[in-house]
Length: 239
Image (cartoon, rainbow, N blue to C red):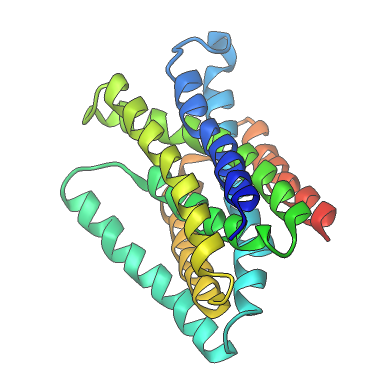
């Protein structure tokens, strides 16, 4: 493993993860937009994050994962991801917690950071574009997750931001793991991607999409289109 590749992995993953606490910091401003548009803005950001997550599932995690494992195994892992995160979501709900947005962000960020590291050796230009996409996705996801946890009243804002900084720090660790361990373990990487995709899809429709509707406002669904458009543009650029 070249020191240059290691440095690139750390740098790209750090930049991509930094938008998680940045999104949380922006969410901490109670009057980020005028009061008359606050509700529509909030719902639009949630929808944008959902669209970006759906793009990650449809354009990155499933196609890249399915290329690396047998079709039957791919289906089983995808289903297992949905079932496992159903159980986790139920356990969190029974304890009165609210963490769907945070869970979805982690499910998106960590496997993509692994893929980022694994791609650096063979396709560094693709890794750079993936880092850009991860960073752009993490900003609305960090915003939404901060608001969700803050409104639950379970943590102070300072503790939430500390949690987000710690989460962002996992990105470089996962990228180095991908660079070191997964260049020759593509089936493992594919399995992780598919498992995460199943969990993300469950969380989108169970916890994120129901927060989007707002009567007589059309910005939120357009936000979902914009979020998916972001991922689509990146997929076309990589392709």
